[in-house]
Image 1 (cartoon, helix red, strand yellow):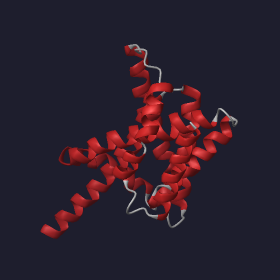
Image 2 (cartoon, rainbow, N blue to C red; image 1 turned 135 degrees about the horizontal axis):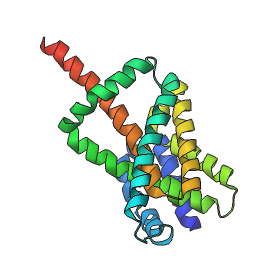
Image 3 (cartoon, one colour; image 1 turned 120 degrees about the vertical axis):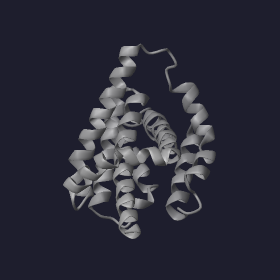
Length: 204
């Protein structure tokens, strides 16, 4: 287990130093041993009831939306416009299905590694708050969009802290996965809508 933690830290360091080389695909390949270990030792493979799954999905969507809205004053210079673009841009997601599928996979992978594996492993030696903080700090470090530092960086760090808290409280991969996915989808939706509007201006 210690070797797997060291592997994760090594990937974090490489991602920080060489973000263009250590992208999502390379990172996932390097993390395959950690993924296998987590799937075997940390996940409860008992079938959940329909009610439990529905509660995790619906709860995750609601919490994801709430956290996104709460973070708007820090992450966006125009919060109202961003939210409006997020809603209007939902129709644009149909034209970007491949990227949507990618987000479905990458958010699940990130939650599996950073919440399920890392927090669970760190909690074997550290109190929960320290495990959550360290996991959030490392997760924040591998995301290149947090550099240079700014209010958006703080919002992302707080979001990741809350993801860690949510995992410790619920012990549910599905819940934190949906929270993370919901946030990303609305951010993508706003981005796609802005691109769509820009294309209309160019064509006119």
